[in-house]
Image (cartoon, helix red, strand yellow):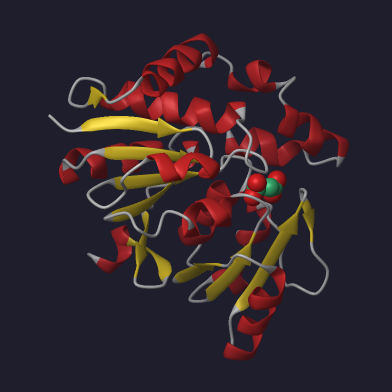
Length: 239
Ligand code: MLT
């Protein structure tokens, strides 16, 4: 039986052997929710980039560029990190280079993994179905906030553990802890998260609708996976 484990921060990744694992990278508020939304609206490739300067260079290659730091859209880019920005016609058929405070870092630091899947509440069941099919050991990598634990990514991990618990064993206490936390919160994620640090940070920035949107279950049936040097939607490339 494959196992599922949860890494609460990219800063803990050195403790894990990623080689044979399927990593599920998650940044609920908002990077992976945004990426899933972009694929659902026709983006063909997403290139997660570590820094602003490198991200800027992709514009010359005809990519759309997106950047966020501390929850705010960075100047000089086409988009920030709100999923609502990626519901436009212009997204269709385009490659997007994006850098965010935590989410893109979590993805790039997981490159040694056998597989990287992009997870969010928005595509939770698509991710669970794929992992069932893959039957590889799973490590959920939470983006957290600047290396620290956050609640929303851990709740996603718990939700995924709950959907896989009959066919995956728990590798460590973090899978069990994430499940227990999720079971306390699952009836009303928004209320549970209301006092969390990133929700308070985004609320202060007047970004309320993104929070509610990113906490919805199974809105999109897309499956962003890492191929060579970018993310593509497996649901599209295998049809
Ligand atoms: C992150 O990368 O941590 C988040 O996506 C930041 C945000 O956009 O709120």
